[in-house]
Amino acid sequence: QVQLQESGPRLVKPSETLSLTCSVSGGSIRSYYWNWIRQSPGRGLEWIGYIFYSESTKYRNTHYNPALHSRVSMLLEMSQNQFSLQLKSVTAADTAVYYCGRSGFYEGGFDSWGQGTLVTVSS
Amino acid sequence: EIVLTQSPGTLSLSPGEGATLSCRASQSVSDNSLVWYLQKPGQPPRVVIYGASRRATGIPDRFSGSGSGTHFTLTISRLEPEDFAVYYCQQYGSSPLTFGGGTKVEIK
View 1 (cartoon, rainbow over the protein chains, first blue to last red):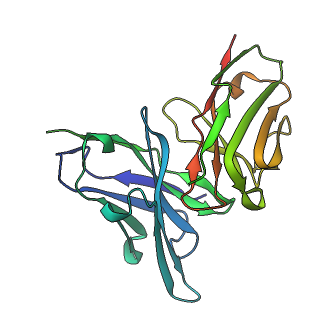
View 2 (view 1 turned 120 degrees about the horizontal axis):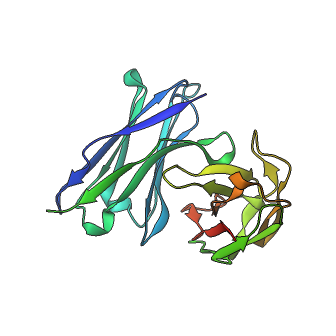
């Protein structure tokens, strides 16, 4: 069974960049879709985007929520079986629990999730 | 963007009772591309139903999903103590993927 674990700074200053890594065990990131989702009391659950890699075609793709597109980037680190999130120019509105999650097993649903990490944006 | 509206906000029920949760979409969700999750405090959401009506692995048959287009329903036939949680719907038929605001099923 695949397991995911988020890691990264829990406190980020306004205007700086939030950086998180998701480590995947029990499965390869060379298939399925790898997502970031966040949850806050004010905004509820919000999908940030996904990154996808196909081992058979060597095709790599990202797809971001248009609301965050200008500030988001995601990368795959194949050798580490990890993927990452960078969110630029953060404000207090970006304070949330950030989850990494896998989709593609139950179609577009997120079948596997990390435990989540609370990231606070504050000076 | 498809906006999902869940109702009611809270359901207060006793174990053994049935529950009906609603998820309405602001526009049609293509190909029944809708998931239901349950979430307990301090845990990530867990898939209950996907494809609007298919149970995820390990989900008991007291859970059922139905609907199409703009109206979807999650039904729990007889509530067990472990079913008391917050339930969310999520559509994956169009980008961006979006979630509903949740229905809390609490013990009466």
